[in-house]
Amino acid sequence: MSTIAAISTPNAPGGIAVIRISGEQAIDVAERIFKPFGGKRVSDMAGYSCAYGAAYDGDERLDDCILTVFRAPHSYTGEDTAELSCHGGICITRQILRVILKNGAENAGPGEFTKRAFMNGKIDLTQAEAVMDIISAKGSRELKMAEQLRSGAVFKSMKRCSDKLIRILGSLAAWADYPEEDIPEVEPTALAYSLREVYSDISSLIANYDRGRILRNGISAVIVGRPNVGKSTLFNCLSGCERSIVTDIAGTTRDMIEETVMLGDIALRLSDTAGIHNTNDVIEGIGVDIARKQINEADLVFAVFDGSCPLTADDLDIIKNVKNKNCIAIINKNDTEIIIDSEIISNSFKHIVYLSAKNSDGLDKLKDAVEEEFRLNEMNFDTATAANERQKRCIECAMNSIMQAIDIIENGEMLDAVTVVIDEAEQHLLELTGEKITNAVVDEVFSRFCVGK
Ligand code: GDP
Ligand code: MG
Image 1: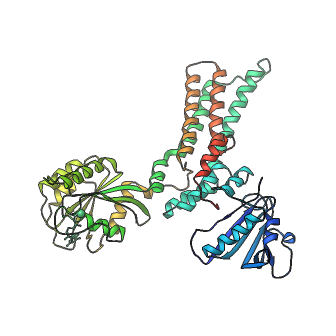
Image 2 (image 1 turned 90 degrees about the vertical axis):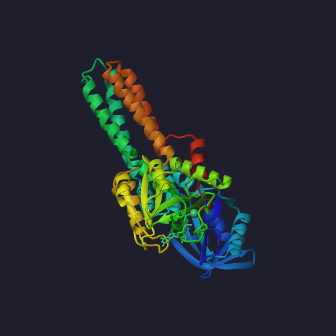
Image 3 (image 1 turned 30 degrees about the horizontal axis):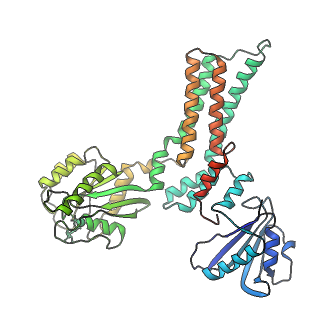
């Protein structure tokens, strides 16, 4: 395989930047452009050792650097690897990369270092996918899930299921191949029982999937309410900036405004909408229609009410509209005297949060309500969970095949047919871990990576 190089740190000024070189020629390339101050040769450096020196373009000295050498197979990629840490300026880092490329390395593609780690058997495909999840994790729960995946939890679970299937296939094959020998007949009830066990083990991998997906993608949340209840103030308070215009004039917000905000550890894809009421203003009317539509499309609705006045007909209309949605009632303006009819609210909503958007007071209670609504606190990080649609698809296909096998057995059909579908289930599990997979799928997985990882 060719020798590749890329800048592994962000494309921004920083204290240090790291340029990574991996492949058969990695140490030779590093030797051509780097001279240790101690006079030692790079090619004499042992694995896991560093040298302080300077990077050169021919005779021109570029920057003082630290070179770290990893010898195959004891590196991230499983190949010889050299990592240069230089001053973290964009210009100097690019200059050094250019010299490295001039001296025999090729530009690495997205995720190519991790792809090589996978190709060289250092990690399975679920662990490779976890690397990207760790990089993109926004909150600590998401990070925990990614870390669990990286440590091989999904891979190990799958292996256990796969081993059980192979044992079942083995006993079926022995019985089918040597009928004249004294091999006990495969007992259909016991076979169906074992398959149900594997089915239940595999299905546990997707039990938490939706909650995990919500954590990874963020919860799409929409703020709705009649005009002037403080929707835009809440939006600004959550986004930490004056993104949405706030006035005491009803109808100020006409368009929908979106922002990704963090509520504690939870990423919300939050939108502020026009106040829902009857209006003759054409533009505002379009905004109101969008707000109504958003109620149906979002994962979560924040229904905002003004605590300082009684409920109006518009409020009651909104209460009707958000029924059957994941919804949290927010009684805003908690810094004033609260005279709202709280009984109607408490009869209509499971979660009610009193807060003052103006004073940013009560946001922790809002976070608790969101956690409760999505039962995020009940997430169990001890059970392995599929991390993306690809993994989920493989698991579901394997589950379907196993269910088919159970049906065949229970209908008293030929055991040959069972062997075929169990084998199919096994193939889906191998696809999940990447042991049997097409190049197109591998390319697809790594295309989502950043260059340098
Ligand atoms: P929207 O129409 O629902 O988007 O409401 P705005 O965010 O534009 O706010 C309407 C008015 O209510 C403005 O005058 C805000 O200053 C005021 N307001 C918003 N939140 C609070 C709050 O928590 N307490 C008080 N006292 N006033 C608020
Ligand atoms: Mg507004």
